[in-house]
Length: 322
Image 1 (cartoon, rainbow, N blue to C red):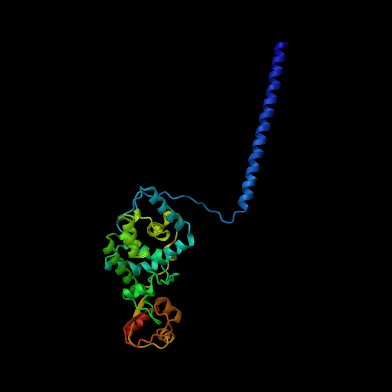
Image 2: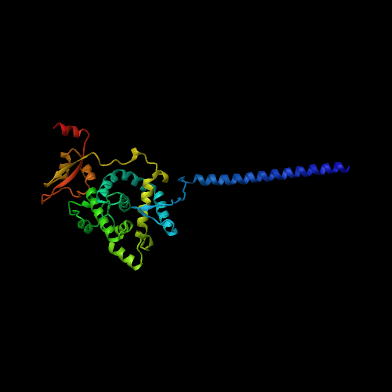
């Protein structure tokens, strides 16, 4: 009798436990389903699906052969800021990578000829995104020369010609400008900072703060970020796939390679006529020669200019046959 009662009690207890466990699991599944439904509803409202990750900084960075003291937390955070900003500024950085394929072919050999470290091509990226833009202060071209500074380094600037927009001549002028600052400060990093803020102000900051390194200076916001921005451009543009930029060779902007140089030492009353004579459009004449800022070239002094003209397919064969 007692044994039978015990078996009965155990059976009832087991049934109750099974019921409770089943109820709990059902409730848990229901809760999970509610969460899944909420996530699904939230996902349906997401307009852009992407993964945003932090950046694992490397152990070594340098600019123009000068080491970045990355072991300093302040330096690491300032560099990480520029890497993050430009890694996730997708359209701008993608265009910079594509534009570099065109303009680095012009800039790199000139830097080498002038004895300026190759890393300074990224200074042009930081200055202008490799575009002939005009700053609020009036600086122009891919190297962002102010008029007085440009003239001081041999660039012609008037109503018809602005050589701040001349890719080759402006690059040579920038090299001389950078070299002057390097000779003054004895550091390529400080030369880059001076390019941004001006030599006299940089010298004053170095003196007042008892510093001899860019990384020890406390500057105003723009120049505080400037060299780090250059280093970030260098890092991303040299390793685009590591930062998610999958731009194929065929998607790059082509260099201005297939051109002829036309020597001009006489006035051109209408550049549209000049373009027609050379079988190109007025627009293409300006694309290749943005330094021609007017519709004419009076050239009253008989100066020799070289105008870049894109070569049409078959042009070379025709020239050789003449």
